[in-house]
Amino acid sequence: MSNISHLLERYREHPAAAQLAQALQEPGARIHLSGLTGAQLAFAVAATVTQSGRPPGARLPSAVLFIAESKEEAAYLLNDLQGVLGEQAVHFFPDSFKRPAFFDDLNPTQILQRSETINRITAPDAGRFAVITYPEALFEKVVSPDVLAKSRIEVATGEKLDMDFIMQVLVEYGFERTDFVYEPGQFSIRGGIVDLFSYGNEFPYRIELFDDEVESIRTFDPLTQLSKQTIGSVRIVPNLNTRFRQDQKVALFRVLPPETVIWVKDFQFLLDRLQYCFEKAELFAGKISALDAAELREIFRDRAFVYPADVVEDVREHPLVFLEKPAAGVLEMLSLK
Image (cartoon, rainbow, N blue to C red):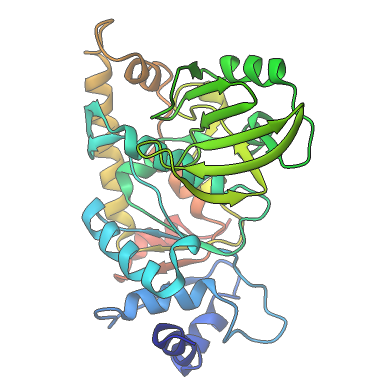
């Protein structure tokens, strides 16, 4: 057992961790935590998403959503939490733009990361996880899990794969055929090899066929062409930002498991920041022209954004942990009806 794992195990045995676990079992739990300093916050969040230290027979949350107040704060906690739980169990959910709440310049890397996070946490084998985000990222809706499940195609080793079918599907999903793949949304076919850069994965896939049977699937580095990992199956998802209508999108809260524990520092600040994003987005949408990037036009075409009042409704059923004491008005607003 590593030193970090040992520390987490000891932390989960602490009476305060057990008390938090007990409090989270209450319907409509609203908990105020104070006095957390340094890495204590990461350990407290990690203890929430892991099983140890909980009362016998307790209903265990399978996920945690931590809403930081800024992108920078979220990045610091992400680093700490990945050091405690490991990278596979902690996901970052950023906004789609180079600067939060500045809508004129998209960030392709963050768009990919949003898609990758949604793809991972909605997969049947998602397990227990934590998602770290911030208000500007929550402002943008995501594809509904039901719609995403119907749009996700899985290819597994040992299965038959019709080349004409996969080409047709990829074109319908907005993928572009190229000689070599180097960014999401591209695929290439050379003999019995299909290279595919899905919108839901950090690295492209190389699918090798023997006749019409999938012989192997590997991820690879598009710069060096060297293999990184052999895997048993691949999930192909389209561009989650542009391939779906507004009525097919929902707030991130509705993608998470119902027992997800939501951590937030100041809930009123979250609502105020979402209102600020809404006002800026409305101003920017009026300035978009045909000269702007097609993906940017698609995002603003349907205004698939989250309203502050909707957030109140979405989080009401979840256990909530506040890092600053909420005002009485906030607690009344979030009370179960």
